Length: 188
Image 1 (cartoon, rainbow, N blue to C red):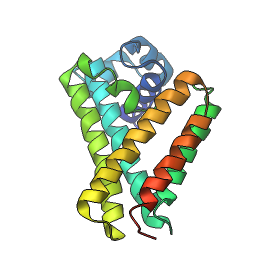
Image 2 (image 1 turned 90 degrees about the horizontal axis):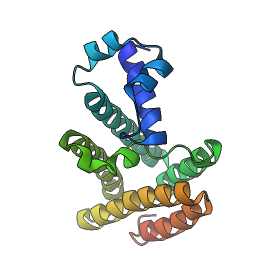
Image 3 (image 1 turned 180 degrees about the vertical axis):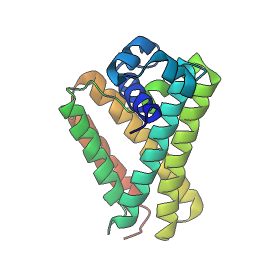
């Protein structure tokens, strides 16, 4: 793993735990064992540029995972079940410390336009990936888009509520409603 990748990975973890505002470069550098000189070599814009890179990376990684899971699932609800299940497992395993690597910093979107834009693009990629999978299974484009937006909004909302309330049953309840919304597309 390159030093650049290490910085992105450690920034991602930090913003999932603390948000951007409470993430310090000193903490990221200490946890990654990368020097400040190397950090500024890769990210001359400092904390903001590194945060944007972390959000972009998490967004692209999420879109790739969504695509693989949705294409590999026999049922149209399969991708949602995998992702919501992974969210619940991640919350429980981290004792509710880790939020979504896109959602947590995006709630601080007023901080800077580049951070807001990175979050928006990540969410757009997830929505596009999900909508594309629904369309590939026969959903009308408008219905696919509306349902995909709902799935991402439900994921983010259940992530925030579960983390705040320390209760993964919120994720399970949300998945049941998401599953019903996807089934209404009549794809399987």
